[in-house]
Length: 231
Image 1 (cartoon, rainbow, N blue to C red):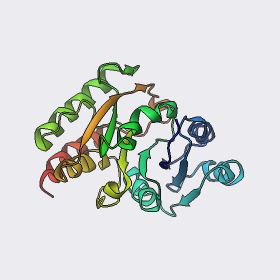
Image 2: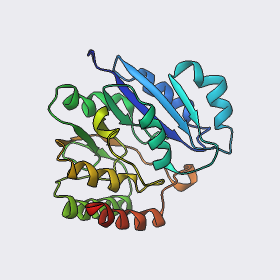
Image 3: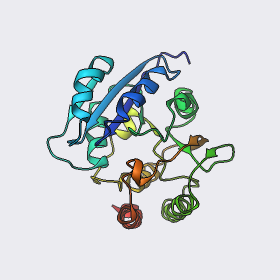
């Protein structure tokens, strides 16, 4: 994918010793020529920091370390602030989302056809290899989010969100944990951004494999859907 635009890839990570090298390798191999890779380690307690320093540091543009674990939203707030590219995309440190699909997600912004793009796991043409409960929960949260925002999304909770940098950096991110998703969705809706979705693939991991989001995060998402409709 040839373009003069630069893509800033923000990778928040916490205790991802087993996955962080592989995901960085995949990001480097993704078909976007100009990439800025920013990793924010949210005070990992396993060997993630050692891997970052010994193996990954020379391959990335910036690694930022939190001295206290604060949550995904806090890590994204740090990474987004540091971004300098034309477009910013979020990449979880696990292997659920494949960076080979970056062109699908960012091209509408590069072409100035959108300000924000969500990579949907439930859009027609997507490939979702998850559990029915995961699908039901995400669809329920997306439905409620749409009611409050007026958007017509199919996957509000997706990791793959891409933004024009000036838009995401103009948003004051308040949520420290997984409430980032409904918060940022409500705020881009209020900004009247041009939002579109594209289909992506998805291969979820289990709790045993390190998945961190849980039931309490779903309850927080419900609260955030209502809160950020007006705040």
